[in-house]
Image (cartoon, rainbow, N blue to C red; front, side, top):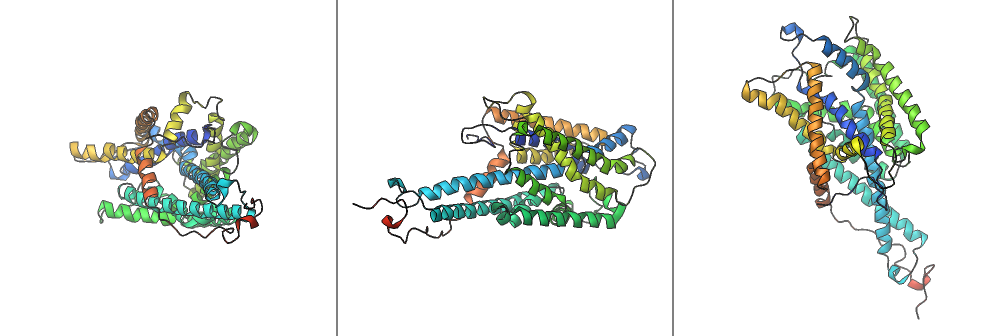
Length: 434
């Protein structure tokens, strides 16, 4: 299978920033998700006492990772979705224009025909995004059976619902809905107060239900409410808008803007999460607005991380090649679904399957040790991605999704071009017969 390089122009120039950012972001996601698998028993039960290393690691993670990794993931999802839409509309418009009668004879398409071709291509792009969204929902559902913190389903829901607005670039409407869902989510968290932070490191106690059923219920809740009705929609829209600019694909042209986003975004994120982080290392009570503040400033943190990673990746090299960590991170980033799902497979193996087979009990680790496991898991998957890169192969889950989307496409009746009812010599630019 020949791998198509992501984010390339007609001359094959590689724009590394989106893929490099996605590759490093998946390390943040692993670190953010591992507490779901290693949720330690409470100290009150007499089975675990948090160490100073655990407390200080959670302090750092709260400032820079929690509620920052997934918004960054959402931005890059929106960016990639809009890149796909733009490419589909551009290639589809050319194909429809080439299908017009008389084009091979040198007849120039009219303005009406060009408008028709672009409209048909836009409809095709909308159908592609929506079809892809439905498949992502299915992937997310299956993944959610094993890991209820799945985010693929929420992204699929965004694609299904907003495919039309995205393909027609109705950003005002998208920003409005994104801002409303963000404000509603923050408002709900303010109303719930400290109670809303209880599920941050794992699922509530649902021992009365089979694990698969409880996971599916929590997955559905997360997709419909916790994830969708939060800041990820706004982040996805911002990412889509960035795809219509050169800020990310040519970060070398916007160093001042991106540097300001790094300083301002990460500083605001740290300030917003500081009090919540301090509760892990100091004997101070949580504030009712801690969770809401972390959630809201997570958007700023995601912007800061994206800007920093884009600056690190830089613009396209003259020879189109990447070296060192950039090459490795790009290989990971272009296989993001495979990496994300592989994390679940490895976490499940390490924390559940092997320990149950060997000792009959799950593996429980402290927060700091679990983070080291997350880094190790990411490194193992990095090796897999580098091997796939050298072989010129896409990730298996990307291939599966692409195949499913392509094979589920259904032909549609398209309206005739506006010029078909006119004689050939009546169209502007047509050559009279004879």
